[in-house]
Length: 310
Image (cartoon, rainbow, N blue to C red; front, top):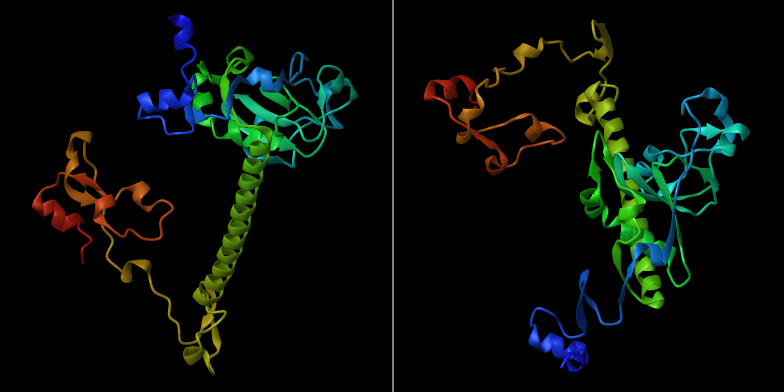
């Protein structure tokens, strides 16, 4: 009977379906822990679209005051923490907008979809942003990480016009898996700690890059010398400026062999011999394996002309 089927337990479902691990259940959003629930976005947070009703939008009489007026780019570039703003409103401007308190989560719904960030100041925003205020029993830091992790999903829900756009009608009923508040707190803390570690490592890496850049500048210009070469040596004036006495100037063409690249139709690519293209070089200090290179069909005499093996 139908009533009997409704009494089937999660453990019974798990034993019938080996794809569901013990302690988990199948839901509308997939397999989640037994203690979690599924709720619509609108049931766990107030979603309020930003406001700026002035027309034309670029009328200067509304701008240039002391009230922050964040844009989608401010959120996208914030890495989760909105500490700067690119525009301000005056008292006339705030009359046609709305001020949201510091700590509000902002979510981009136009052009760049699904970028999120906490504001560190009271701010107004246009209707290309949504302000999110979690209800009780929802940790706002957990919610931030949850929706941030779904950027690709939200992009898939967006309407493709001249630019990507997603509206509240699609976001409000969107279903999310919700852990108990105690677990939300632990998840938020763990992810925040990870973010802090990543940020500190990025700062350390940036500092080391600056040190390397400075060292390169000193050594490659001769301002600092390797000890066994610099002792007792002076400098001389040249067309390039001051260089060490024991250095010489030479045309670039004398330092190596330069060869033209390949210019072929699209049908010649995808098979044949390895070749290096722009993206293999862009952002890379070395090309360590031909396995990562593309292929091109080229005659033997062409290989002799183009090859860089020597």
